[in-house]
Structures are given as structure tokens and as C-alpha cells.
Length: 336
Image (tube, rainbow, N blue to C red; front, side, top):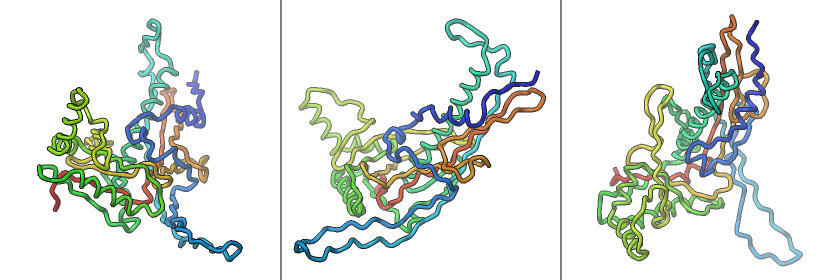
């Protein structure tokens, strides 16, 4: 009797996309929204800003001026492509037990659910990593290869603010104002509600232990009668909400990849309307060519001689900041 795998690629893709992506702090913060399906593997990103202006008083009944149209233009970036495979073989089922309301033999459905979750988590981790890199102004993959440098693409000079946290006399609050003002100057009509900085553990420790910052929280603790607490999940000081983001994961190259380099941080505006975007391009499947992309695809291939089934997963995300001038790099160092 031949192996009967009852699931089509469409069914598997629908099933895996129903599993919510709950992985990662960047995903949780929602900078990039729900994502946009693209019917092309080359993503066209308009560079024109819609014209906004402070309006002038005009006599009633007179000629009404028109807002000027923005200069047209766009940038085209290829969406990166991330495929990976796994398989279900007799060894995954034979002699395997499941402790589910009492021991029972493991079934194909059990193993399929495990494999689908493993694939989902790998692609979710990849998307989280890409989004963190996009907040730096780059797109770097799990082989540590730079796919896109957004500052270079948009012709914007990268800005780094050096906090000089080893200097006890430095005014940290003034540094936070500097960052906020750099962002505000470059909003150009875009809205924002505040500045959020994701920083490395090394940056966070130096910041928290800096005399001016430490004194502030000690005074707060004394006033409230409570001890100081773990602030790594976020605290506001000056113009910035600082949060430690201590994420390290293994890449497909077998090397460990830090999401944020030691002693560094990245400040971004919160509450923008269209600064951060996620695009999803179609997979490398003829049935999906020129159709709007989804976050993840899975297709099965039945192995010869009843040996099992291979599952190929594909994602083609492009998380991007279309205003890289709003991305401010933070350094705990004193500067060049």
C-alpha cells in the first residue's frame, strides 16, 4: 500500500499561516504592522512624500491654491528569499509514543504538527532578526550577509550619537534630547508619539549605572519607599524609552548572531503612520507566480518507495524603513 499523505501545499500553507507569530520583541512592538502582500519578487517603494504645508489665509470666494504634487520616484528592491526543508520519515513515527492523556503511539498528524511548528518558528525567528536589522538601516541574513543597506539605497547619511557613558560628567539627559531632536527634524510631516531605543546589555548596564541616571532612580525609590527594580524591560529617561534587547540566535551558518552589537543601541520613532513596512513576495512556485505573497508557504513532496514526505517551506519578506534618516544609532563609546 502506497503512502497516503492527505495534505496539499495549499492546505499546509493555510494551516501554518493560521499559527500566530508570537516570536520576538520587535514583532510584539508592532513597528512593521501586519505586512503587505506583493505580487512581485521586486518590491517597488515610492520615494515621494505626500505634500503637506501650513496653509495661508485666503479671502472667502477667492481662488483656492492647490497643494503641489510631490516629485515622482521609486526604489526597487528584490525581496530576499528564505527556503528550508524538513522531512517526515518512518523513524519519526515508528516506536514513538505520545504522552497525551496516557501513552499512545505517535501518528503522522502528531509529527506533522511538530514539523510545522518547527518551520513556523524558524521563519518567525528569521523575520524578527530581519526586522531588527531594518531598525538599524540594514537587511542582514543568517549568513551575516548584508542584503540591503537602506541608508545607501535612499542616499541618507547614517547618524550615530555617542553617549560617552564611561564619562561620569556627561549629561545623559541632554544626549537623549539630541536624539529626539534629530528624529523630529527629519519627520517632515510624519507623526510620532515618542522615541524607543533597543539597546545591548552592555549599553544598558553603562546607562543604568551612570551617576546621573542612577541618582535619578535612587531618588525615585527613596521617594516611593520602594527598592529599585529590574528596569531592563524598559524605562524612560529624558526623551527616550530605553529597553534592553538581549537576543542571540544561531544562524544557518552555525554561528551565533547577536541582534544588537555590544555597546550599541538603536533609537526609532514610535507611532509613525507609514515609516516601517513589511512586504511579502510570492514563493518559488508556479501556482503562486504573480499572486500577492503571504508570510510563509509549505509544499509537500512524496518520497519514492514509501519512504516518507519532504516539506519545503519558503518565505520572502522585506521589512524596511522608508525613512532611514529617522533611525539613530546609539553608541556607549565616546566617539571617533
